[in-house]
Amino acid sequence: MSIKNIRLEVMQFLENKVDGFVDQYLIPVEKIWQPSDFLPNSESDTFFEEVKELREIAKDLPYDFWVAMVGDTITEEALPTYESWLMEVEGVDNVERNGWSKWVRQWTGEENRHGDLLNKYLYLSGRVNMREVEITTQHLINDGFDIGTGRDPYKNFVYTSFQELATYVSHNRVSQLAKNYGDNKLSKMCKMIAGDEMRHHLAYSEFVNQIFKVDPSEMMLAFNYMMKQKIVMPAHFLRESGQKISTAFEQFSDSAQRIGVYTASDYVEIMQKLIEKWEIDKIGGLTDEAEKARDYLMKLPARMAKISERLIIPEDSYIFKWVEPAVVR
Image (cartoon, rainbow, N blue to C red; front, side):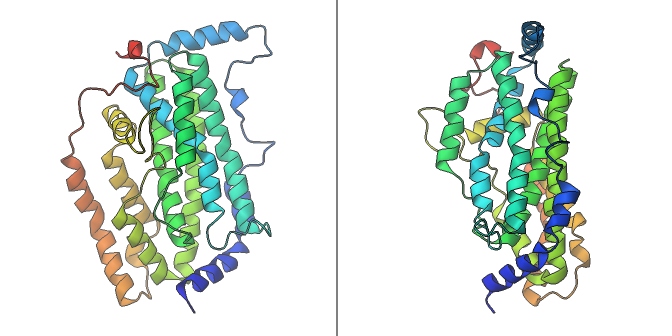
């Protein structure tokens, strides 16, 4: 049997558990928070006062903070790309509306709230050039992305396990920074988003854990493949108006590292957490090739940590079209 057919068989086997995963890791629409729960109520007589207060507090937030916020928002807003990508994974059947496609749709529904909330906050803050943000978002959706997984569910679930934890780290750090700057409402918004990301990380990492139980060698090789080629961030093709693909991502990443929202050290820590979560050192019944992959994975975080220590982040901020220069502090 081919590797592709084995993967499909494993996905069909695990599909019997998907309803349980939905109940455990996702929240019914009627019970989960919505963006309007945290934003000024446009139906209220106090709406303009609430917006004025939001804008006053926003004035004190520094430039790199706004860049990180915009980058996070655009990443969340590019959700159509992520849903369409996951719908193409082997074993996800949207035509027959199987269990996996049900998961992808409901996961998408939860994730969609994040961009809605952050986008409206940015719009109301008055600190961001929304048209430029909207252009970048449309470019990112138009350009799509290639995360190096193909239609392989094993590789895709490694990617989502890693990426959901990375977005948890990013949103949680922004929440902490917002609180430090006195913006308690924004802090709560980002904390709620971070909570969703952690739940989703726990789900995808459990999918990988289940696959390790039934196809350990191939799952090990898929994990090794993704770590060797490095996890590409969803916003890797980020660009502003008039730019070519990928030109803005490095500067955005520099801003995020300068204020500690997401750093090279975080990347290494996430890798280590996944190795520990899946108990890579204890998995048995591996082929010789998978054993070599395990050895490589166990040593990789230490190697990557040494590389991250040598990284030099520019001190000066790149001026994006998203954030007005007057906001630089």
